Image 1: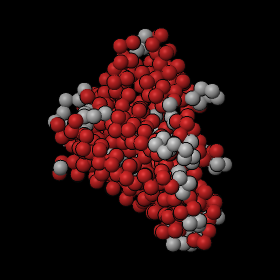
Image 2: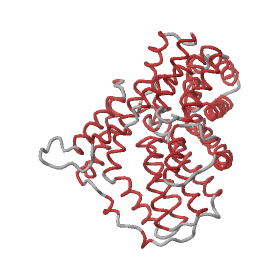
Image 3: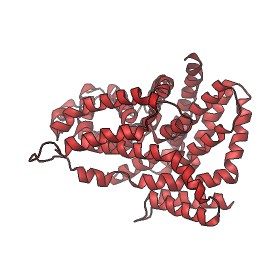
Image 4: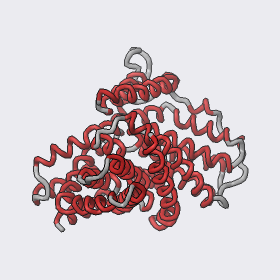
Length: 433
């Protein structure tokens, strides 16, 4: 009960984020209380750090890359192209926005999609003068696809990185399993969102209101470097997978290259358009403290009772066959993530699966089902993921407040069918490869 109480209070402060006390310091304070109370010990710090360090610094590097490209106008350029490709037809623009969100989420992580795509889509909606219900459909879609399309690569979600590192899944193996599954998730997302918002999506909009995409580019050098750098980065992640080089090192090198280009480090006398120091200041350094602090709190909760309880349930599921084991694990992870946030839920799921004695295929299915549940399950509630909390914060800053009631009304309807179809895709696809 003590471990549970510490976790609940810590989670409240993480969600509340009192002024001057971000998610990192809140989580670290919870960890300090857990240490003082004996829920965890100093030896656990090394265990937790070994689990989270690569994922944490990979995420920081990803956001630095995203912020530099955003400052250069890369994402606005892409969004303006999408708006023009819609050719004035709202029902074509809708799937194109989903596709853009899916691509950004895959390459720049779900948090990057929430942080970068949301304000750009809002600006386009204002320019197009969509009525409130139509705007809400596109806004909800942007937030939903950020998580539902964050499955394909290890780097697409912090959850993916933690899980892949914990179970020693290579970048290439993960991609081989999850890229086809992610395609099904995106198609399911389009189907469910399209049906739900079919009456709200406008039939026509004026393309004359859309600026030329080239007008969005603010730093030509960074823009021209974006595609080759991202291409080499993806190739490097696949090629180096066999040598087990930490992903954060590969991602860190790519971030440094873009920082050098943006800061004109190799061209003295040239004025930088993008402020590298500003980007570094705005990087999510709080996530480093959050990862260590929150995972320590959850590790203590797991040691107390939760991990063993979860392992017992997953052991029973593993004995019911591959289909039940996959769906049961995925939905259990989703429900846990929706009430305790997907980052701590991922660790509990991984620790529990590690204790399950099951056939190799069943166990592998459960590992990926835990990832899917923690990627998609957070859409049940606003507290389910950092991406959702960030998305709501960005919306509030732009004058668009979505209440918890509004969010859950949509989330509880949309999430189950997408989660179900995605898990079925996994259980069909994985045995084939």
